[in-house]
Image (tube, rainbow, N blue to C red):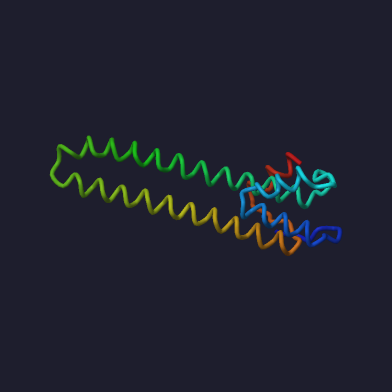
Length: 139
């Protein structure tokens, strides 16, 4: 469950933490490099910065491995079903199913990015079950 931060956050901290989600952590990295204050001393920003980077990595890996698995499975299905009548129809059904699954998983990750963006603007920690515990262990 998301909870409020224990100290009053500046609008800049909340804005940069929210923009980390929009850029997969790139704006947060620029903020860390050019900021006068130490970002590691701001646990709210650091939490959202790390979580946005992990969500960006998850999105990249899902798209990369998903398309690779689709091409490999379509090649195997094409070889197997090429000998049978109606094999191309079966291959198209499997291809559509894989595309639908990848689209659904991407949509879920984009909803998590929007969730993190909104809660960072509100000044709350966005608790994502598996991801937030991983981030908290590495803080």
